Length: 310
Image (cartoon, rainbow, N blue to C red; front, side, top):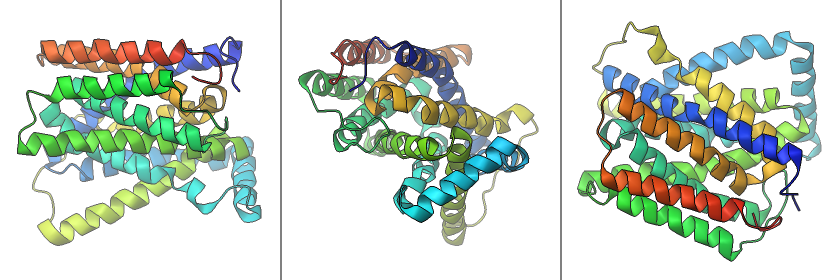
């Protein structure tokens, strides 16, 4: 059971909110790069690979990094970690791919609301099964209520855009959000066995391998992308943001549980998403504002619940 009033938990929630504002920027960068290169898979592959190169250089060069990698390797060898604990990067790969494929059409705010709904629902199950480092958390009325409010928010946000193509696009971030709940849990397990550095590096290795396999399959069917690489260096920085998001998730989920971490990060994501859309001149409709309000209500429902139910 997690103490709601714990200073460590309070600090973890605050950090999750602040850092998660970068998720909206990451979504916009991957979406824009995908539009430039005309490929929603190539864009996150490029930015994730950049993040992997940085991690592969920095972590082994640090004594603490080498020690953490050894501890994680030992945990897999002894069975403390199972093989599937190392596959969180596959979920991350699917998430960044969904950014490149759907953000341009849905907008960052709608994309983020859909991710929140999927993540909230997935977190209910992940916590119920005790997959995260904080153990089991029961499915309560407060948790179910929060998930239901988030699903309603998605229906409102996407209701005016769900033609045949839009329905498919909304499904992508919904599933990606659920996958992120599982990713948060297993990365937290790896981080607890070694360190967040080891968990982050492993996550990026698996993500790059997954995206590479998908990209090669895509090229075999459709050929190489027809777009061009943009010259603006900031368009390639999504991987750097991804590093901070994975590090924070692996570090704080043991204090919060998967659901509370996901909901704590919601406020940051939504604030960042609305801000990004406004800065670039995208119109945020009334339905999206209502959806954002409902999602904040879901955060309140879950975080005001008693310890053990939140």
